[in-house]
Each structure stands twice: as C-alpha cells, then as structure tokens.
Image 1 (cartoon, rainbow, N blue to C red):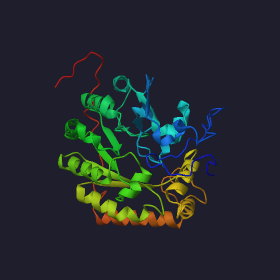
Image 2: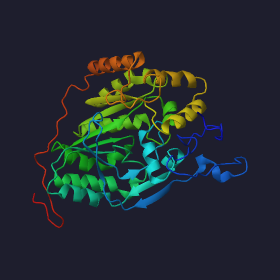
Image 3: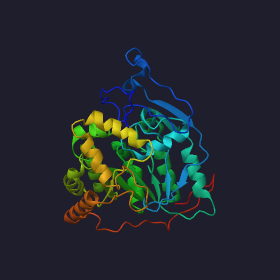
Length: 357
C-alpha cells in the first residue's frame, strides 16, 4: 500500500509525502536517485499558480447527503495541504497528482466573478444557497492577492443571493464588512472547519492552515458582528482526534457558534494510499491501529460510497462517535436554531444595469 520509492523521512511542510500516479495518465515522472537530486525534495517545492479562464464556475451538487444544491470553487487544489481532503481526487482531472501536486499546483479561476454574475443573471435561474469552498478552500493563501472570493461575495450582495462559506483560514475576517452586510439580510452563513485543539496534530494533519486558536477567534469575531456562524468538526479520524470532539464543541459554543456538524473520515480513490503513507510516517507508533479503526467504520474498508453511510460510517466506533456528537451538541446548545435563508429578496441584474437601492 505504501509507495516504496517514498523517502521515509516525514516532511513537516506538507500533508502528502509523495505524488502517486494519476490514474488518467499513461506515463509518470519518478524519482530514481533521491540522494542526488535535490529538486525532487517535495517539501522544498514552491507553489505554482496556473491561471485558468474557466467556462463555468457553479457546479450542481448531485450528492444527496452533503447539504448543498450548488457550489462554486474559485481555486482548484489547495495549499493548506490537509492530508485527508476529499478534493485531492479531483486534481487528477486537471492532469496533476492527488498528492504533493494538489497542494503545490493551484489552479486559479480568475474569471470566476464574471461567471457567477452570468449564472445569477440567467432568466430561468431560481435562487438557492450557493456554497463557496464546496471542494477546496476559497480563502487559501493566494486569495489574499487575487481577491476572487471577495469579488464573488460582492456579486452575491449585489444580487441579494444567499451564500454559505466553509474555511480553515482566518483571512475570511478580511471580508467582515461584506459578511456583516449580507448577514443583515439573512444571506450568509460562515462555518470554520476545526478538527481538534491540538496544535501538534494540526501541524501534521493540516500543515498550512490557520491555528485552531485563530479559527476560534474567527468564530468569536463573526458571532459578535452578527454573522451567523458554526463549525465543522470534520473529519473525525478514530485514534487521532475522536477523543477531541468534546473540547472542540465546548470551545466553539463558548466562542459563539450556533451550529456544528461532523463527518467520519473516508479515504476514497487516491486518498487511501496517500493517507496510509502519511500515517505511517507521521504516527508510526499507532498507524496500524488508526488504519484498522477507520476500516471498522466502513465495513472493513477505508471508504464506503453508499449515500447516507459514507459521511458518518457504521459499526460500533461510528455509532459511538454519533452518540457523543449528539450528546455534546445538546450539552452546549448547538444546532438548536433552524438554519433558514432569505431567497425572496433576490434580484436579477443584467450586465450594465445599475441596481436600485
């Protein structure tokens, strides 16, 4: 299962420790003499940005168990480098690897705001909440320069269109002015992904993300500003962070979160061998135990694609996680308020038309 050519030394600056073969490509580049070619040291690879003029930006979500109808992702690939990220597989469609390529070769959809405007302007479109970061984080580091997410939020505000955000980056607070205005019309929800409160674990699991303290500060700042906010305690990885759930939900509630969700880790496609390799390098003392616990949640495998089961798993460990989540949410008054959205104020604005205030 482990890539035999991978250097056994753990690279702290990366999630994935190597580049697995892209299943869509006939050939691949391999490292034959790692001791002689410094350029192959994956942790030293500089991030490369590929600027793309996409044809579409809004994706219809067909999966019935993810809680969204449409998503929009201004970036493909994610510099945060979270080892478990389900979006890694989609990087193969762009001709790259789901491993180190995913976190070092970032596709920038520079015309995303214009495409979003065009989508909202379609005369047949009926508004439903659209999710930013349905696949990769819309506030990853390049957003500080490109401001594509900010421009998309400006268009949501202009059209009075509801939008949801999930992120691991404190950069979201840069756009507090827009988020506050959207919140005043019940047009936005912001979720922070918080997997643990253990910083040592974060640095291995999500090496280029904001600290957990920073993410809780995001929750607190948004809540105090009147922006409805929640957290995703996801994914739960039994043997690594399942026993951190109580502290995460307690801290999130104290910071002002109204809602919380969770998923159990699933390692589909190329993510399985990437995670397996990482696990044995990052946590060699408990790698097999963690791997077996994950398998126990998915019928003896590390992935179950059945709708309804794939996100939460089944079996005794998955049931224990589910029971604890419900208990802690009840204890800390999370998910008590129904999440409703304003779609009645949507206004269709054609190109060149000025909105009337």
